[in-house]
Length: 168
Image: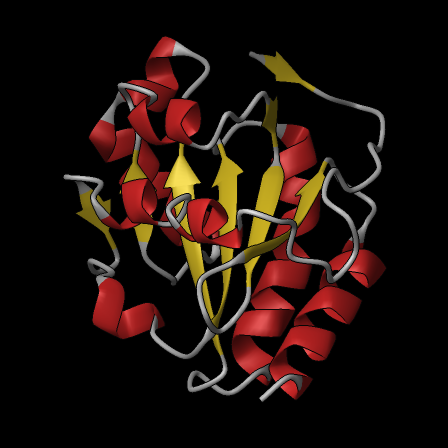
């Protein structure tokens, strides 16, 4: 598990659902099955018909902090009927494993969307994640359409979200 300082190119083909899209849809299931949540729990009914961003982060990662303003902008500007943002907090340090610290930092950083606590890295492993931060962007049918690794790619995230919202 590595923090990254460099920007990585999106890993999945832009706006293309690969063959085996049904298997990609299953990638959202472990997120929704996470047992421990802050700021509310998210279930299948909450994401049905919406574009979903799953942001894998840890609160003390500087790169994660750099993507936060764009996620906050999307959360505030895109109607809730079109977009759901879900955080997955996967800690790197012992302090980041402490629930009270996560609660305090989410409030301090202004994270108001649901966050699954992933101290066991079960969601991290199910997503085959390797880096903080990583955003997984799912279409309205639950298909993984883009993976964005690192910071500095707000335009990619925003263009993907806009394009997927436009797909009805």
